Length: 318
Image (cartoon, rainbow, N blue to C red; front, side):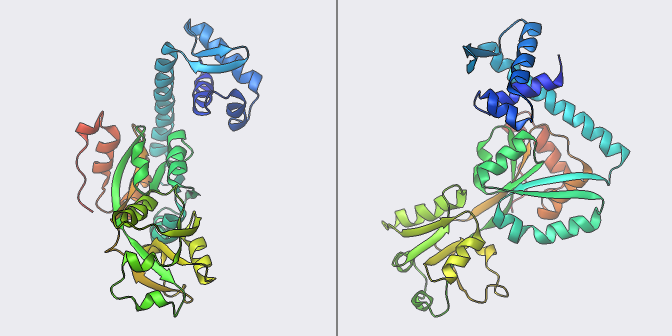
């Protein structure tokens, strides 16, 4: 039995039983993957996958158990490497963060600067995507830490810890009639074409719910994956923008005006997501605490190693 065979099993499962897609992801050949999986099945004495001709069509009952065990074995193997690295050189290594554009652009810069000053020999990578993509990057091992809003807590493979709360602002070009509306209301906003986040973002659902609760049907003419795109099209006069409050910078956004809309929408919570049972390097714990001071190493370790939700200590309120 080889670790590579287990990797092949898991990747075929992750790719929806598409062996060609798994081969492409792992930079190898489809026949090579099929051969290694067959050899492993012969060694184990059971079939992991159901086949129809050359196609994989389902996972067998013992196959589901084997896939779960394979994931644990590979995770433990990775943890062994991390332990060695931690004790051989605790200030050198790599840190990969998966996050959304808004978090990377507006919430993380000061944290990243402080981290690089503390750990100049650690190579830091930021991977951007929507919350679903962010979660999958950590589950697959492409990244070690996920930072996004609520939806990442939908994945059983991840432990999620609340970090920061945020709300929304309404942005317009200078001189827009909406700027005269005091206090700002959903009824007033709904009179204009709106530009806001794509449905892939959890915070978007809170926008929809707020309007629905008032019996309003907003005219959303354009959606985007990041705040800077939304601001660009608001500057062009194509509509009124609804963005995360942190995304407005009065020093940079001189062609826009902002109105606080936190009284109109429910707050959203940014969360950190980590793989259950993962072994984190010391500098990873430090990065988390720089971003969320209420999450010291002891709290994060307890969450990662908890066997079920009942063992999780309730982290301090944010």
